[in-house]
Length: 171
Image (cartoon, rainbow, N blue to C red; front, side, top):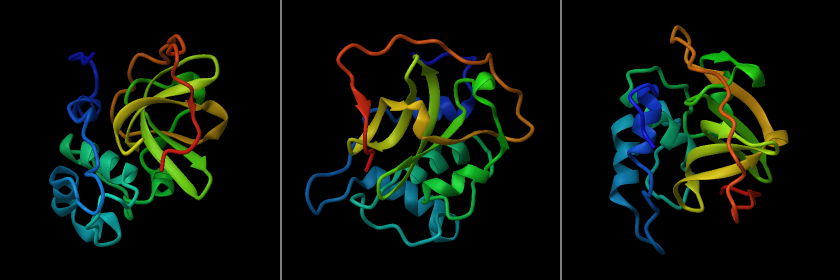
């Protein structure tokens, strides 16, 4: 549920829920359009296939739409580990950027809340779509907030989503 109190970049992310990769060799023109709008200088490479991991592209698109600066090499999830200012786990608020380690690379998305074991993350390239998923807290390597922006309400306690297991690999 979107609220007016959410930061603009999180509202931008929610508006993209359900966006999916195209099947097979095809590409979703929306995802490719995000890449074209940001350009290779921001992304760190030419991006022309939605089969290439796009979680960093999704985060970059949302923060850029909110008028925030984007990290260099924004396509790489690990690049987001230096964006903005660090947050401790007890200071998280909806919209915080979370960076995770995973086999074969990393993942980046937006904090919505948490249960005892996992962060609830709104992100791109989660099962090939923009979704909300649970990612184990012990996989989180960075928690970030945009510099100069007021911090939100603090951590949000959520119940584990019944039937939704922890994500193991967001690629």
